[in-house]
Length: 341
Image (cartoon, rainbow, N blue to C red; front, side, top):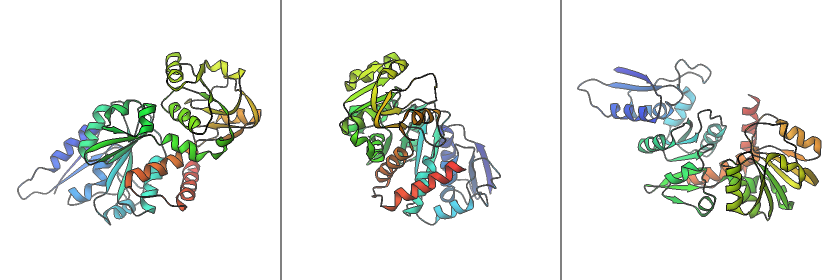
């Protein structure tokens, strides 16, 4: 057996490996293996393409970059060839989505694998990953708006918002969905009592926050952001108030959303009404924003509930199977374990 192991830099490299696997050599078998964090599509499908597959005895015992564990590989080969999914994000992508979706696949006995794909070249990588046969994607910053033009069809929510966070291929066409809004509505039932909100930030997730607020009847909305053009565009599109980051301190509000990527102690928060809540759309470590909000009297919540509920909505789109009552508890425990690690 001739073994060829090469580092995978991008999706086009995976296409090269796939073409090489298609060659037939007279009386010679080949084992074509990708290496590196972007090699996982090749590694996952290796048992269906190569005469042998190299794995690690344990996930902590990896001897080559990109190597899968023996337990994971054995689980995948128990069923049909797995469907592949990924989260598309920026070059510094860090997400719990692979752990969440692979956990759901395992729990529901679905033959599928979900990996991370950081990219700054969305158009090219999307085309190559599509050609490789990936079935669906989660989309996160900074690609939620850009991904819209890659879809053949959009659901009404993503069409009205001009952003997608879920892509799934059906009958040869790419369908785009917006499940962030669903994650907010389902994840924070406390919002049903709110009448006013201030949103910090103007990135791709903000349109989902606005749509969720309007769905819940929160019509007194103000977008506070540093980017004048972006906040003005959002305010014009959705019919909301808008202003600088500094202008938020003049407001009294029932809920404040933090959609900025970093903490900024110089930004003064609005005055909380009785029973007001503060939601940091980030998750994991305690944030400076939530600490300051709690001191002012807000009930402080992070983005975990949004992530869990939008992930369950994505899972249903990806596999065409309803989640069950135990899935939410399963995800809560899974996230606690990963955050502690």
